[in-house]
Length: 195
Image 1 (cartoon, helix red, strand yellow):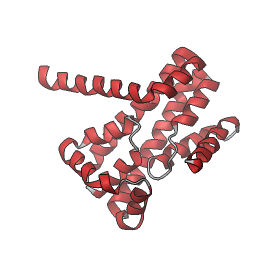
Image 2: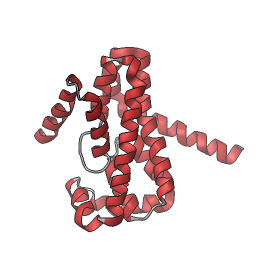
Image 3: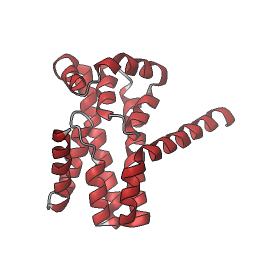
Image 4: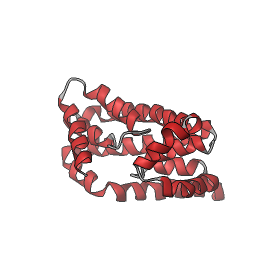
């Protein structure tokens, strides 16, 4: 836990440097395939420092995350034994590997979209998507929906409510994620069965 806290502090320190925006991009990229600290930490710090740029930061975060997710997909597709398995082992995800495979077989894009939006480690799903040869276009589309939904929700809350919303986001992010996913899935079900 100490090492994660040190990484968290290291990530946060970038907000006070001239390299904050490139660091946000790189962090989002790396977190989608191997790095343990989510980019939300830096996104929140930057958005709070300049709320009118919240959506710009969310865009940078989304693009970095999608490109990193593509790297995770390639790791799963081409390098699962040499790089993918050690990453999954590091995160203790090997026991969940078959479960994730079942999720992909049942839900395909839903599994990626949900993992991209919620606090579930997205990197595990990006690597698994490649390993299970999920349709790449579907993977990218679901990743865009999930990751953009997550980062733009944070940016929107900060843009609307300012720094006061920071504690609320950090405290209730899991609940906000679940509520958003229920609304998103409900919307798709309404479209599917009503229209």
